[in-house]
Length: 503
Image (cartoon, rainbow, N blue to C red):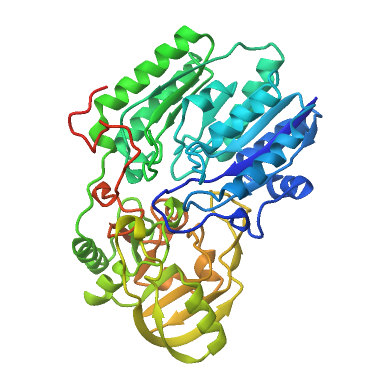
């Protein structure tokens, strides 16, 4: 048996000014062929699971592409088509295809990157079975459903089950091909744009919905059931939550999908997040820090730092990773011993590297990418301090999300103002791991406050060393305040933009 296995991941924030070009799809751009195989072999990605399954049955494997870019603006059309062509060129002659896709890719010339790819593969190889592992935040479309045999998504956010989703998607396809099971897919999309913070699988509404999906699988009622939270920061027709069920027959699959969707709609307010004012969040952080010998229930170190989670500028939702609002408010309220990271400012990095380690400098930092789509412009913040350390900005993830994957923040400088130490990088980057700070010599557990450009992914590794956390919102392209975003393509009515929406 010959299997095509490939990975193409991008979550597109159509409001983000951060470009998405071919070199962004990997540390040094996409991996092809043998390098694509090596990048995923033994790694906890869905593609890694596909490879293990294929090798376990002695199949011949072709791996034309492994490409994943941080969430950002619409994907460059030429880059998208060149990567898709790699997969298309490898498809003829294969007995099946296993694809590790995101599900929320928007391209400069298409609102449905994954649907277009699947449609082209189906047209090219009409009899070849296709299974797909999707991110929980995929915006599922009819085109995706029509052109895949099996769709399975993650069940965790923060995502720690990418491998398991790939394993399930791959096993179901192989069992179907062997005649061991019958499959039928059903899908329901709701007119509900979820807030990303409420798509956490520890948030009550999402936890309940995912729990029901897992129960259906464990009881054997269906082969797979996925709650796809969707990604609302995309101005496309339906950036909405949906349900996918891989059942044993069409009737029972649809019945299960309908029941899950009805439960979500009944609890729709549980998917809506209301942000407190930024000043209130910083005051709350000060109060947590002043509590001696006490850690919040989700955190593990009563003597550790308080985390300031800047979800309005979250790299993994398409943030610029350079807004300064949260740091400015923290400094204005007198917070001390703060580490910030990572802050993306290539111009500042260049200045700091030219100045050299140990130099005293005054620089204009952050707020440099205009938020044109929101009609917002900010002014860089002038700070004086020392170039404490220069680094290549590379580390290997040790936490549960993408464990073993090598990360690069580009050239990285540690800028120290005395009260604040800022990890300044060339690339936008999610704080996946303590390595964000370790690679420039900071012990994050020794700080009073850690300002992280993160919504969720930092939690598995930073919560154990933290005393507590607060969620901080401001004017950025990943804000939870939908009023900031000029949606034009979204089909209305949709909740919560329209309170009278029905389902």
